[in-house]
Structure formats: C-alpha cells, structure tokens
Image (tube, rainbow, N blue to C red; front, side):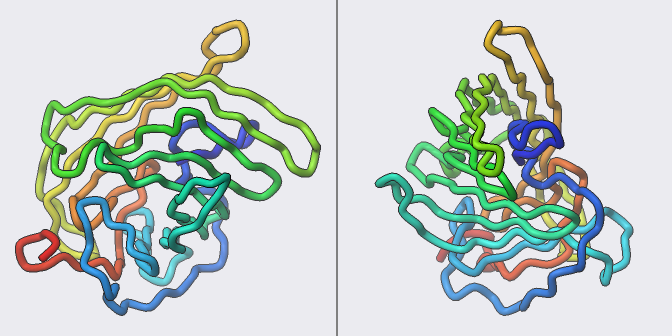
Amino acid sequence: MLKSPARPLAVLSLLAACAPAPAERVSVAQTTRPPTYYPHPTGAFWRYLPEGEAEDAPALVQRVEGPTVIGGERLTAWRATGRGLETRTYRDYRESGVYIARETGPGYVTTISPPIHEWPRPGTLDVGVRWGGDAVATVTFTEADAQEEVRLEYRFEVVDERPIETAAGAFEVFVIAFESRSYGPDRQTEETLRQEVWFTPFVGEVRTDNGLVLVETNVVPDAEGSTP
C-alpha cells in the first residue's frame, strides 16, 4: 500500500495497479505451516487480478519472503510484483497487531517512525472496530542522493462483514475503510487518500485497496478457519 508517481510513499498503496507487466506464475502448493490470524509464513503467496479479467492476464503477486534483520529489528519481508509494481515491504508482527516499518522499491527506501499500525490485535476484527495513528515517513531517493520527510495521519475502520465469492473460493470478509492525510513541513495537507480492503482472517486480503480480487493463494486454513 505505499506508492505514488511523485512520491513513493502515499500511505498503504502497495497494491497499486499500474501498467501491465509479464504475469508471474506461482505454485499452488499449500504452505507447510498452518496460517495465523494474519498469515505470513515464508513462501505464502496471494495472486490478484481485476474482477472479471482472464485468468492468464498479468497479475499482481504478493509473496512472503521471510524473516530478516534490519537495523537490529527482526522484520518479515514481503515482495509485491506485477502490473508495473516491484516493491518490498517490511512488517513487524506483534501481540498488538501488524506494523509496516519500511518499504523499498526502484530508486527509493522509505522508513516509517513509528511504524504504521496496519492491523489491530489478532482476533479483534469486528464491525465498528477502529484504529490508526500518526507517523513520519522518511523517503531516501537512492539514485538522486536526496531525502524527503512526510508526516502522516491515518485511520482504519471495519465498516461491514459479508460473504463473497472469487475465483479463489468463497469467503466471509471484513470490509475495512482506510483514510490517510499527508502533510508538508507547514502542516498543510498535501494529499488525502481513501481506500477499502476486504480481509479474511487466516487467509489474507481477498480484495486489495485498488480493487484487485484474489484468484489464487497457497494459504489454506483448517476446516474451522483457524490454526489447529
């Protein structure tokens, strides 16, 4: 969720669908570890397409690359590729939820302090639940040897719960509305972003913030939809 043409960070738009790129084909083998409430086992993937698009169309693929240590912090690296996107996002999984600490892409590195609170405490998603915060994103343009600081204010709210069906199967999703504002040094609002995500615990995002729909994943919960 972190991408814009002028500034690599426009809070939480990692899944932006851009110009088509060659499709990445993935294995459908189930992950060897059972999924958690917010699944992130190494090797897990999620493949997305615009609703109604042909199965062989260029897809966006999110894949968990696994644990890594950056600046002394143990984070989990995610890679997003396809449809013009090539980014790595570094998440911190805590008892209090999931946090985005860092993102890298062609020509930039973004560090976020404090990390963006992407998801609340596991097991707490329900209609009416809200969370959010404030952060400072420092964008380093590696090719231009320049740096930019952006102040962010963001809010999430679970606005609905509903059954849906996609090519990947039938799911009960939480509909999460997201709004963020970015500020310049003078505290004038530079950009306001409003998006919506559909999420199923123990499975992951079923519809991304840019309207791409899940068509394939190797994350398979047990019969009751939870970790054994």
